[in-house]
Image (cartoon, rainbow, N blue to C red):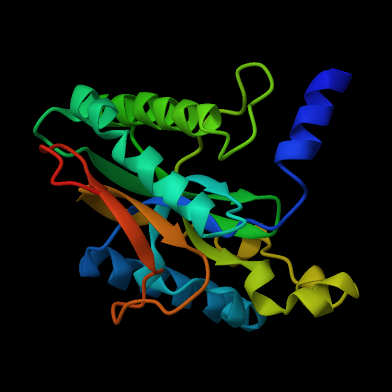
Amino acid sequence: MSARAATFLSRHFPATRPTHFLALRLGDPRLHERVRQLQAQVVAREPTLEPCAVPPERSHLTVLVFHAADDADVQRARDALRDCAPLAQRAFGQAPPALSFSGLGSFGQNVLFARVGPANADLEALSRFVEDVRQLYEHRELIPPSPGEGPAWVPHVTLLKTSRASSPKKRRRGGGAGRLRIRPESYEGLCADLGSHALPSLELCAMRGGGADSGYYPVLAELPLGQLPLGV
């Protein structure tokens, strides 16, 4: 990274914790029940992982995360989501994308997730749409510019993550979740078929705050996919 690029990033994107994200919600209760069953099977093998389980009602595919310093930043994110409507119309027309979920994967020994697959035309269209959305948010200076082509999008449904098992204070001290590991033997051989599910909308969510009765994250704005937008 050049010195000029580093200066731009430090000025416009200081090292702060993300506060908001764009997500494709998976709201089907049948998927939630299958997630719950998978988590129970993992915990049966390794009981210490119980606090690592992500509430099934929060199942989603993350598109991007960012830090909003104030209400003005949140409004800019709302406006950017609204302006993604032509991108959605071009990508999906009148039919929302649908993906299948099968198999398990991990990020090191800290995150266990359900994979998206097998690949299909909807996944290809969705991946292109996600890249277009990211570029729009980059241009609005809501997320930092990606170096080069940037990392490929890895859509996944998080099942367990060790960071849920301890407070930030404990993690800074090197305890708690730092001692937990989601080892392969805790999930190897498990059947992880979550079925096929439609993704009707892209949502702007807050990581914290009062959530809905559904148990999902607070939703601040929504963009329908595969239909004419009704407004954001």
